[in-house]
Amino acid sequence: NFMLTQPHSVSEPPGKTVTISCTRSSGSIASDYVQWFQQRPGSSPSIVIFEDDQRPSGVPDRFSGSIDSSSNSASLTISGLRTEDEADYYCQSYDFNNQVFGGGTKLTVL
Amino acid sequence: VQLMESGGGLVKPGGSLRLSCEGSGFSFNYAWMSWVRQTPGKGLQWVGRIKSEIDGGTTDYAAPVKGRFIISRDDFRNTVYLQMNSLKTEDTGVYYCARDQHYSGSGSYPAYWGQGRLVTVSS
Image (cartoon, rainbow over all chains, first blue to last red; front, side, top):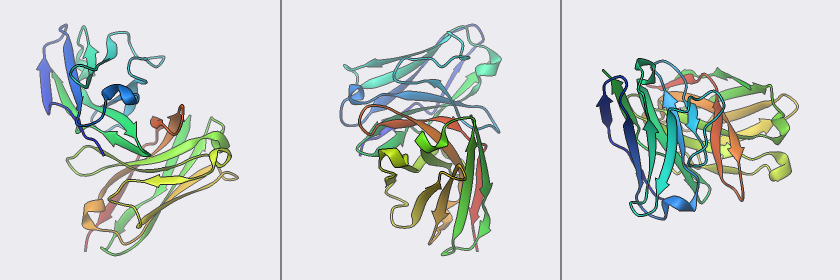
């Protein structure tokens, strides 16, 4: 099975843009869809990006997703940061009847 | 979509526990359902899933729980179950029920999540 590696934490001030990476350890990042989940303290995770770059209704267009085969990684970009974006973010993908989550990235907006 | 979990609590190592998750607001009998857990101070870990009966009703499990945990479903009750046996201290965590979105082949991801139930394995 593969692993998804994320930075432990990132920090940016309000109004700025942040990008969180998710690197696949083996196999191609493009071989299956990547999803991104937001988890605020005390809440259940909720999906913010599905199928690499699709945004569910209700998620602001400040959130965008992409994949890069050259670095075998996926990215979540949040522009115009707001304090309510402060949360843990997890990437997720699938392979051979297994769902795999990244270790999560704590986003601090200050 | 609403997912309401029940069960959980404190159990001794080696013991058993069952979680239930009732779904509403969607066609439960067509849904693939997953369980995901979050251990203290750690991230999310997929536990396993069950496909809809029309797609075979088969189950898949993560390696750490395979052979100890069993996922089943009762479409008449719109409920999915997680039977946890031979529990270990490292199974302690919050367990989430999720309705998966499935796509081509066997791929799926948890699109809607329940509120989670705490399971504590301790002597």
